[in-house]
Length: 269
Image (cartoon, rainbow, N blue to C red; front, side, top):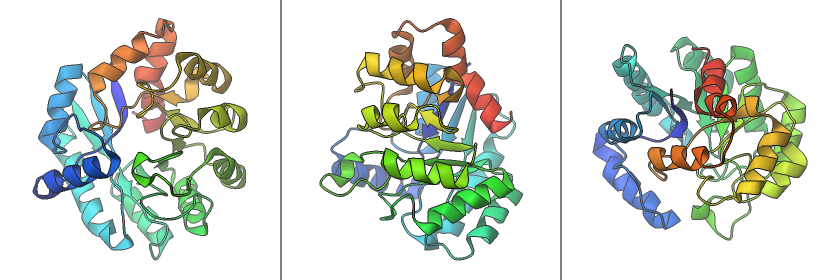
């Protein structure tokens, strides 16, 4: 079984313009067209069973439209063998964060995505603290971009390991996921500051550039039960990333945990 815990899709009418803009900003080439069908095709090439899709609110007013799209995706794939499962998006400047998180829970959605760089807010801001506290209250997963975002070169890193560590210690939410293996391009600090804490790391946009020995050191120190296979598709290819992970000569038990067992447990599936 194969679960990709970090992917992105967009409504058909905005997929092309959104993907083109993001690709230009980050100087990256996408592996899909950003549509639902594009993700399904990518899943088929990799024989993936489930992809978690993570929307990002760039402004608080997008909450309702993004939630509506997430609900439609989940309804469409609820009974499919190969599934897309969409999270909702939250913004730290949203009004009535508790009410919105309660609505997400009532909608049957498993979690939310936040992105400190896209949302121009540091991870230890009160808004994010409130989101995490509500996620703990309503038993929702929170996935955050962490570390360097290539599209924001020259700007402060808004979710670095040292700030994340303070947030984890303050909130203590066991369903908190740090994308990009704890912090993109800041992996030595992940090893020094975050490994061993009660938090998940996903492998999105990591396996093609991290040193394999450093990857294994983080895996060993943090523990194989807290790592989730992920790609950031369409910015990385699912099949290629799965093969890269297999090439690291990990045990089959470890691979099974990373590829699907840890995700099934976190998603309560």
